Image (tube, rainbow, N blue to C red):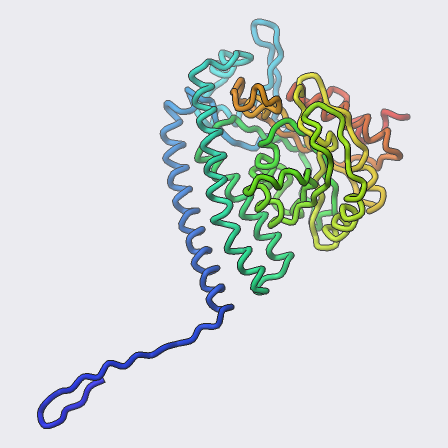
Length: 395
């Protein structure tokens, strides 16, 4: 401000203080965080495009790494000279410059040390980046929830999107695996039915893989999944942040080590049932790992399967859908003596179509052991898998 007096201009500074309510400050933080994520998204796209260009001539030739959705009806099988049966994915390999000859030449070969070192560096980089990206994305949501700006359901849905976003893009930036997603040829449901999803458990990377490929695996119109997990995983601050922010459901059991019989604390079952029921009412699906622990030898089949998924399905009157993972243990093995000692890069995940309602727990266990056990061990469908899902196996 200024005015003239006796020919002299005098200046008087004016300070204006604006009081901003705490809620608006948090909203500003949320807006800035959202802008940062949008900028990061564009940066990831640019980096991803550069990686694809650089990999087309060198990277994919060295690592054979890519991510593409492969519908099950596009499978074609060919016998290679050594009479070993392999599965081809023409659209996948042709899109990255690997033709039929290259596929046959690389089929069933043990990974060499150089490729293993590249893949191992990718796994470690992915894990380290997730430890940084998840807190950056989730802490602003946590602040908004504690300030009562967003509801619990909004917090959980946004946290799941953050987890999926980080997993998906970091797997693209550090493409340590050749991931194939196999779906049955079926139209997406206009109104998805609340469902219990069951999957085998082969690696510590299982949850991140499921989050990264969720849209390609189950479609864009599916309900978000809340996974039931072992509560002791909360000892890791990053997994605790992710699981609690996403509203995953914990169950308590003794730490008996992988490969040993589970010992559950029955006192946690009541809260488990209550949280599961609430998740369905809030519009979520439930994800369960029926083995209850990491499988240290998936090539030999499954660990003992628990019928808890059938019990939940019966009590909630919800259908069961099966998912199968193969090859992820080659990147991060459940056996602590092996750990991240890469022995292969080929990973596949299979989403099976809906089947008939199981009449009892034994039918569910038998179907899961046969269909998912075979896929987890071999990376291909059991020849007569349909009869286990449509109920004709018991006729």
